[in-house]
Length: 197
Image 1: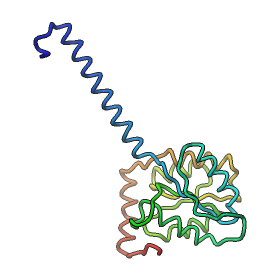
Image 2 (image 1 turned 30 degrees about the vertical axis):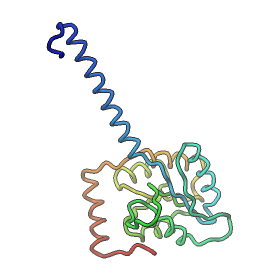
Image 3 (image 1 turned 90 degrees about the vertical axis):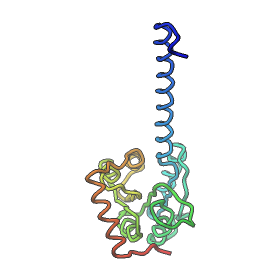
Image 4 (image 1 turned 60 degrees about the vertical axis):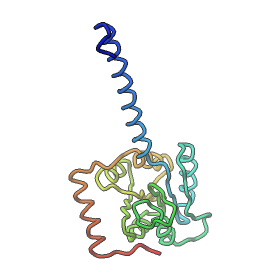
């Protein structure tokens, strides 16, 4: 049908078709971005991190993230390993299909050290303690971290918001970093590291 049109109309017609194709391509790419976007976040803390956890929950909810709180419910003394173990089972990279999954996690204790140690005991977890936004950027870009660990005793709420914002917006760069992350995954398989029940 197009070949029977005058040259000027052909050009206009092709322009309309190409415009629609471009719009469709943009829509496809936008859908991929939305699909890959972090949407559901698990968060947990011990008693030292409780206040910061509650503030971050409100902040993230305002940003339209879906939040699952794994505790604690108050500032009463609590053991951080139990919170870390519970949250890690729900990270999508952990092979337990029977549990509801979150895209990434945020764990908070006083220094962040204990939470990071406990979380990394679970196969598939790459938890990183981030004390500033650059740590968070590298954790995502270079290490494909799936849990952000914060130190409540050393991180103000404004600083925590900045760190969290970077962690959630950055993506894994792959390439040479993929090789290193794969080495970690291969080690987990070779050593048959368990997933905590």
